[in-house]
Structures are given as C-alpha cells and as structure tokens.
Amino acid sequence: MTGPVQTPPDLYHVLDQLCPMHAVLDATGHILHVGPTLQKLRPGTPLPGQRFLEVFELHRPRSVTTMAQLLAIGGVKLHLAFRTTPRTALKGCVTKGPVPEQVIVTLGFGMSIHEAVATHALTSADFAVTDLAVEMLYLVEAKSAAMEASRTLNLRLQSAMMAAKEQSLTDTLTGLKNRRAMDNALWRLIENRERFALMHLDLDFFKAVNDTRGHAAGDHVLQHVSAQMLQEVRQTDMVARVGGDEFVLLFPGLTDHATLDDLARRIIARLEQPVIFEGKSCHVSASIGTVLSSDYTNPTPDRVLADADVALYASKHAGRACHRFYTPDLRS
Image (cartoon, rainbow, N blue to C red; front, top):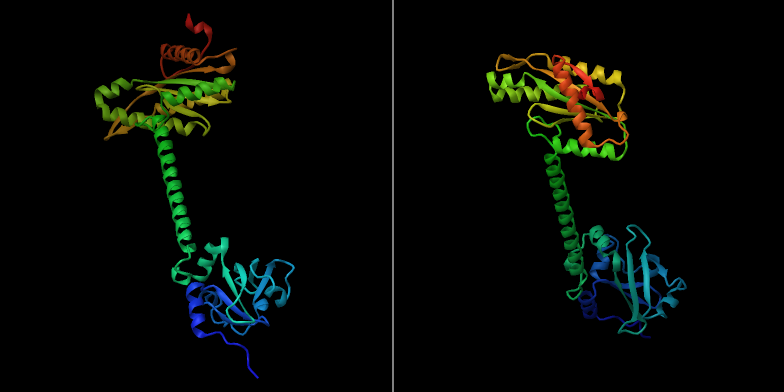
C-alpha cells in the first residue's frame, strides 16, 4: 500500500523564493508548508499542521464554507483574514499544485500592504524579487513625504505672508497700527454701517522734547504714550499712529458722549505724567477731538477724519490738554 505523495523539498524551496506568501494544502485542508513571509505574520506559531480554514476566515466568496468547496474554486479571487489578531487582511487565489491531491494558495496584501508592513515589520527581503509591491510602497511613502514637505512649506509661506501683511500694517517704532491699517478699519466700519467713534489725538509740547532732549528721547516718549493709550482702550478698539506725534483711536460700537469724554480725560491725565528718559523728565500732554458716526447720514472716511481734525484743533485753541466733540459750529 502506497502512502500519500510527498512534495519534493526542492519544490518548497522554489515556492519560497518565487512566492514567499503561499500555503501548500493537502486534500483535507491541512497546511503542509507555508512561505517564509506568511509564517513571519504568525511568529512563534507554526502554521504547518493546522487546518487552513481554522487559521483564516474567508470573507469572499461567501458561499465557500468547506475545504471541498475551496478546492473546487481554483482561479477565483479570495478575500480572507487571520482569525486571530492582528487580523491582517489578505487577497488570495487557489491553484492545483504539481503533486496530485495538493493545492497551492498564493496570498498577498492588496491595499492593506502599508498597514501590514508596519504591523509585521516587513522589509523588501520578505517579498519576491519580482514583486513590485515594496517599490510601490516606497513610491507612496515618497509621495506622502513630498506632500508633507509641500504642506509644511505652504504653511511657512502663509505664515511669512501673514507676518509681512501684519508688518505692513504696523508702526515699527510703537507697535501700534499704522495709517494704512486705520484707513482700512475706518472704511470697513463705514461700509458695514456700524456705529463707532473716532478720536484724533495730538501730543502737545512734543517738539520741545525732541529739540531739548533729542530724537532718542522723543522715540521713548512715543513708545510710552502708546503703551498708556493701549491700557485705556478695549481689545476691540484700535490705536493707530498716523503721523509723527498724531494718533487715531477707533471705538467700534461706542457712541456714548459721557463714556467717550471720560475715556478721553483719563488718557489726557495719563499722558500728562512725566516720562523719565536717562534720568530726566520729559513733559507732554494731549489734545483730542472726537467724532461720532451717529452724527452723519452717509459718512465718508475723508469727512470723518476732517471733522475730527477740526475738533482736535478746537481743543488746542481751548488751551491744550482738552477734549472736544465735533459740532458743525466749530468750523466757524
């Protein structure tokens, strides 16, 4: 009586080289031999000797539930996965082996190759030399790296553009907004028909500081004055330096006379305090003129700024360190 036909060991060696992801099954569905990469997916658990359908769960074709049915569907694409974790998904195909009553199941990762390589620490040595899967994976990773580098570069460019835009709207000496930023903000308030107040502030006696203490002292006074004004306004308000010693303050949503007058007087009181530079006192004060959007039917930036300038000079004529609201009679 003759026993079952044995597969020559050299044939296993050839299969291991050409298809390291394969399993040789006998007619009962027992695994006779597996390729080295397939065995690597279950380290410490020898696959030969186990039933194929007890190791793998067949997802498609769903009609196949027995080994006899599996052996009968040669050439059909299989979708399967390990029954135990990690449940790596695989694609496969059954074909008759060179030895009667034996079949070979060739397996691959398909779209799950990226996950499989990471999960099982696979390298190019775990694939057949003619298998382009790893090369394709390298290309995908290279593309991902290139896209990430491009995204990082775009973020840097956007940050640089935002920084450049912010710099273009900032007064470099004081850190306040500049004339361009103020013009933009005023235009938006008017365009959106929002209520607002605008204060035009001019420093009194600033020229004397420059003449007697020098421009370094003048710059120090401007920086001090800017910091003092910022402490009095809300975060939603804007303080802009629009000239050498001229400032514009914008107050969105605020048109109450009493509140604005109190705010202006507090600012004036702050700016009248001596500013120390190199051990010596520098004295300035401030004159302020205020206009309200509620005083106009159809305000324009030029008209608002011109009227604020009129109110400012009315404050100076009143003795400086004063605050005046614009009224039409001031023009006369």
